[in-house]
Every structure is written in C-alpha cells, then in structure tokens.
Image (cartoon, rainbow, N blue to C red; front, side, top):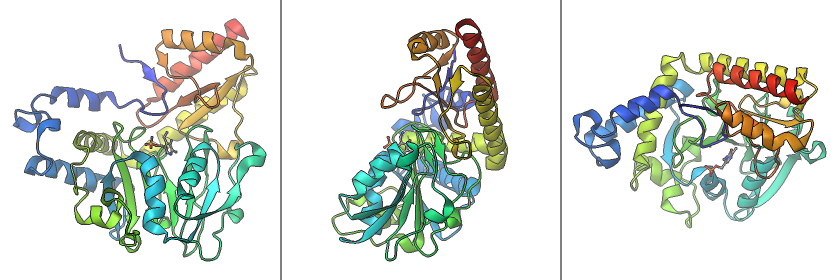
Length: 359
Ligand code: PMP
C-alpha cells in the first residue's frame, strides 16, 4: 500500500514516475540493461541527461547566460563549494541567518572566508524572515547567501532580496521547482535533489557565467564550477540514476502545467493546512504568518505527551514521517510537489479526528 509520506527528504516521489522507472528498470530503452548499468558516455544516457537539462532550463526559465550543473555532495557540498568558487582567500562574504540550514552554511563558509552575518532572526527564535531593507550586502562582499526556505523551522522568504551588484546566492534545496522564480535575480542557486527533484545523490547548481572560473586553486575539481561546466557535468561518473529520474520528474511537472500550475497547487495545499492548524486550539504553528513555508509545516500538539500516540495513529492511517526534525521535536508535515492535495486533506481529516478524541 502507498502511504502519504510527509518526510522532509528523502521525500515522496510521484507514483507515475516510480511506476515508469519500475516498468523500465530491467530494460531501459531497449538496451537490455537498467539505466544504472549503461555507460554515462553512451549516446542513450547523454540524450537523457541533455533532456533533463533542457527541461530544467525550460521549466525554471533559465536565461542563456547561466550554466545548469548536475553535481554530487549534496547541498552540504555546496556550503563549501560556494565560498571556494566565489570568494578569494580573505574575502568577506555575507550570510543571512534564518535558522538551522543557514547556520550550517555559515559554519562551512567560515572555513574559507570571513563571514559577515547581515541579518539574524535569533530574537524571534527563527520564526521570522528579516525585512527586505535589512538584507543589504556589506561593501566589498563577494556574495550574499540566504536560505529561501528553512526546512526544519518551516520559515520561508516571501521576497527575493535585492543585493544590487553583489551576487545573490540561494540554498533552494527545499523550495526549488515549487513555483516560478526569476533566475536572473540570482548569481547562483543550488539545491539537493531529495525533496522536489528525485533521489538523494544529485545536486543542482544554476550559476551565472561570470561567476564561473574564479575558483581558488585548492578547490576539488568535482566542485570547481568551471571544470564541471566545461565537462558538461561529467568530469567523472555522474549520479546517473538521479539524473534519469530527474528527467522523468521534470516531464511529469511539465505535463501538470509547469511551475505556475504547481505553484498554485502548492499554495492551496499550504493554505488549507495552516488554516486547519490555526482554526484548532489543539495544534499550533509558531512561525510568523508572512514567513510560513509552503513546503514544510511544523506544528506542535497542545499536550506533548500525546506526541507518540499521534505519530502511531497517523502511521496506522497511512500518514507517515510526521515527526519534527530530531533537533526540534514536535511535528512537521512536508508537502513538496509530489504530495497530492488529497494527502493534505487526509492529514487535515486525521488532525480533526485526533483532536476530537484527545482535545
Ligand atoms: N539546505 C537545506 C535547506 C536542506 O533542507 C538540506 C537537507 N535537508 C540541506 C541544505 C542539506 O542537504 P544535503 O543533505 O543534500 O547535503
């Protein structure tokens, strides 16, 4: 039985995509092999990788002066690759701190550059985003980095910071492809795949041409954007299965009307779930309404002693992985692209029923 999987990542994938992958698992495109067994330099795989890149360009409306790279090492690898590629030794780099993932990015950047935290939402216990006026780069900053969606805190920016000539770098791991974005506002976007783009192991980087070719000499080649761009992301063996599955997901997305249509569905899903939480006196979400994430919805029960019962009963009802991140506890429903609105409705019904019995 398929369940509604509310995991923050690796996350639920569209059933149609999984079924297609299963159907062609042992004989991909008449090759007599699975896609995992064919050469990454063979015609068939190159065509699949090119299709994935071109669909990504089309769906995200990536301008021509940006490269799309398929890398490894996850978003955590990019926490280091970004300063290694965009900042020289001793350069200052600006970071916005909106919670757990910002902190991880800052910690890694400190190993390579002087980090200036331009805005820090500590005073609200990371339940807010800074005002647009406070997200301004410091003179001479090599770039400004922020986390548009904090997966653990469920905090999301409702705007794109204006950093003028200073390149804006965004960790879009948990928001990429969830709605349209204006790529030209960013110098660099990166995202791990395991939420909206397929299995873990693939990391997307979209980077403006003028930011490529500045890597410090000690940068590992697999994270040097120039080396990877030159090699078509195939300096070494790429995560072939992940690239193949990304292609299927992008086709699925396009078939559903692309990012405009997906954004409308995602907005509706989030609005319904927050409304249900806000209506009840039993569940609550701590995030400031204008900073609430469409993708990750944390909530707590009025009585934390009921947490285990809640999770067990949800599991029995086919609603899985609702436990909050191990660092914060409580609950969290991640509702990425592949979570249908019916899954959100099933969760809302369960929330009401659990409250009726325990509230
Ligand atoms: N940034 C954000 C916003 C994330 O949600 C995650 C993973 N949950 C990461 C970075 C780290 O990604 P990875 O595990 O792919 O390194």
